[in-house]
Length: 560
Image 1 (cartoon, rainbow, N blue to C red):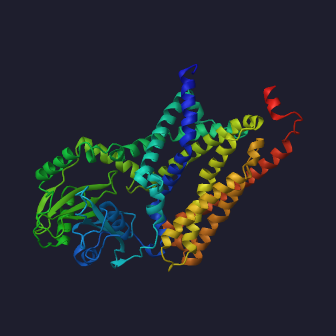
Image 2 (cartoon, rainbow, N blue to C red):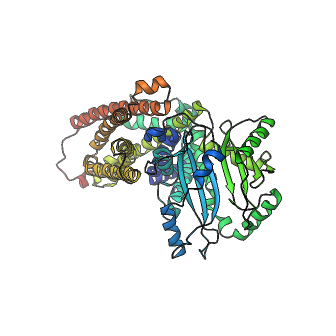
Image 3 (spheres, rainbow, N blue to C red):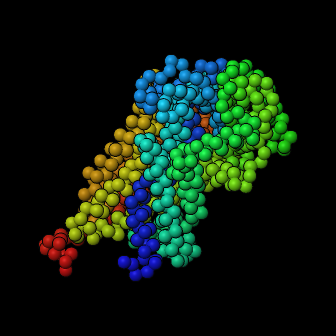
């Protein structure tokens, strides 16, 4: 079938990259945005624009809030569907938890409740979630959408396709395809070192596009390889759920043995018990961390078997000074405050797992490295985009001569997944500043506007793709670049008008979560405007250079 192994790898690289290149574009772009997901949240929710806070007092601030958390209505509806009928009047409380990072001004809190009447799953449960201002304990509105952490980040890991967890599988397949494309690309390009320094913009468009594809693929090759690999490792439990299926009895037995060895109760005792001062437990945990030469603040606070004699409190150190997500936990008996277990340093295997997970999720406090992540992600977007453009450019003359529509279809999809995706992203930011604060289900409307805007860009790209059938550039590229150049500064202006936080104020205060996004939007507008003008000149040149229509049919010319 192929004359050489290298030709076989060329086929793999081309067609694997084309089939899932559109998905990879989405994953890389929203992964790049997710590097600053908490900062985007601050821009989207003006009432959270204050400095990050440490974990507040449990006894005075958090406990009264925990006691008021109820299961979410959406989760209750899903649980009723699983049970096939009504739930118990009062669901038993299982656990409480609070989580924060060095980039979070607000505090996320959750409660877990048992669903006892599910005959198919005795461990079924539902959650309730709230977000509070840790300075006062004030509960923030549930209608505010955390665009960065609750929309862009889930788009990166699951495409918001929730049915049967299909989104995770699509992204996992795309990650495998990415690894295959990287390996096959290395095989294809024998002179990688030369291509690292080769970019010839003065050459013809196809040559310069391929140069940029090779350059962006090579310059961040370790990054491009590391992220799909670590993503697959993180979600291995979804792709191979043996502990929840084939080996579930063995996994449950292992949990019981582990609980016995660690002294942490696996099941509640069924006997009510009071809760000792959690603030005193936090103070003891901090003292122990300092004694081990690793002082720090609390990142995760968990209470298991709440109100039960077997209840215990787990206090995890915030891990912003290292790659792993959280530090070693100290576990306390909930009723007495006695230390049950202090987590030892991780073993070699678990240490590697924690490192790889932290490397992908990058919750560490290292701003230059965080920007390198953005650079790597955006270089991946450029690499994928130029690959799609090269595919269309290489085939559109042949398809035009033969009357085929393949290049036109791929070009429309490329427009939608490149410029259209950016237009939709700007659309949700503009909607965030325009929709009334008192609008019911405000966050849901923001998401609807995102999807409708993205759908509109696809329709626009399809309707304006006719020139590709004549081997010319589709005007939708230029028009959507102009849309980006208009929407981005509009979002900046609306932020100023609706909140008063203009760039002069945010830069002077050094509040970079808002200033940084405003500057990034203005930078994107400048790049889009420059691209639109270059595309307009290219369209004009194509019209001038277009040869006269042949008198013979296109099929006969192709045959000759």
